[in-house]
Length: 189
Image (tube, rainbow, N blue to C red):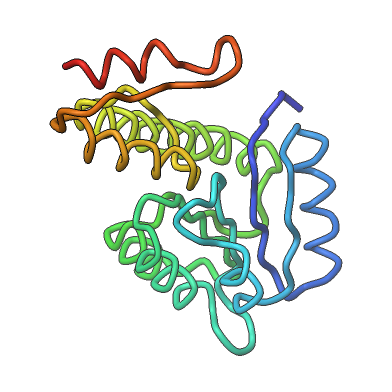
C-alpha cells in the first residue's frame, strides 16, 4: 500500500468489516476512528474535523445517507465517501449529485478505497488551510498584525483599539521577543 496520511472516521455496523477496513487504512498510513453507528460519528465530526468520513449506507438507526445529510449541514466541505453492498446505480448517482465525495460498491479492492481517501484527504487539508489563511488575513485586515484567538490576544487587540486614538502615555512591558515593539508601533499608527 502507498502512504495515505490523514484522519478517517470509518462508520460500519459490521464489526468484522470495520476491523478489517481499519487495519487496511492504518497500514496505508491513515489515522482511523472506527465507529459502529452513524450517531457515534456525529459526536466526532464538527466544523473543525480535519478528516474524511467513510460510511456504509445500510445500517440500523441512522443510515449512511442520513449521516451524510447531517454532516453536510455541519460542514458541506467535509468529504463523505459512501460504501454499500447493495450496488444501486440510481442511489449512487443521486448521492453524488447531492455532494457525496465518492460512492464505492462492495466488494471493493482496498486500493480503490485508499486512493479515494488520499484524494479526499488532500481536498480537506486544502479547505482547512484555506480557512486558516482567511482567518489570519481577516485579523491582519483589522489593521492589527496580532494573530491568534487566545483570550489574551483578543483582549490585547481590543485594548489597543481603545487606546490607540487617546492622548495618553502608555508603558509597554514584557520579556524580550514578546512583541513590545509591534505593540508600540500599533499605538503610533
